[in-house]
Image (tube, rainbow, N blue to C red):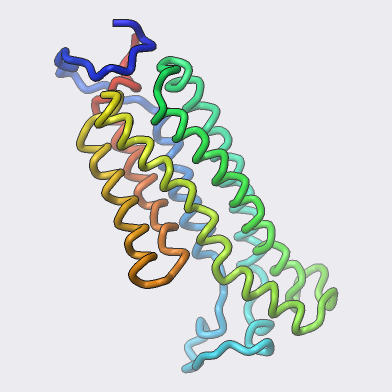
Length: 232
């Protein structure tokens, strides 16, 4: 069978499991993404019985340091997503160039990197402009409030393109036979449930939970048996 053939294999995979390290890069991206995502401050974090709605005065009372840290972590995540996309392209897409699912995974990672750069750049900027930041007093209260509202959801929706990677894995499993079928089924169902949750609740940032799936998928590929991690 040609290495460029994406037709499901009819042969039985070797029984010996082989650990493959590079998929753990996906797990690292997922883990750091979660840390960056939840590295934020809200007016109700001080335990003072805060009640909504958030006013402009409430928004500027939050700790600026967490937003600055999140901005840096977000940039690291964006760069790691590009490394993941390049690694996936070299180790999977170039080996199986006719795989539509593999190409979708690559494009999903690149698209996510672009959105993460913007979203966490805004989060870092808010930390820079809030009271106590290096450039405090650059904007008035209303200007900072606009920054705060934008940061309320933008980092969460920046990870939505990773749902495309989930469907890419599902296609690679069920149509192309390149990854294990259980992984593909779980990935496809997981992404569909997250989209369904948005439809039911109206909360646009729920798909950010895909980062948990990214951690699991990386480990699954590293220790499981899939054609893309087999040598030869």
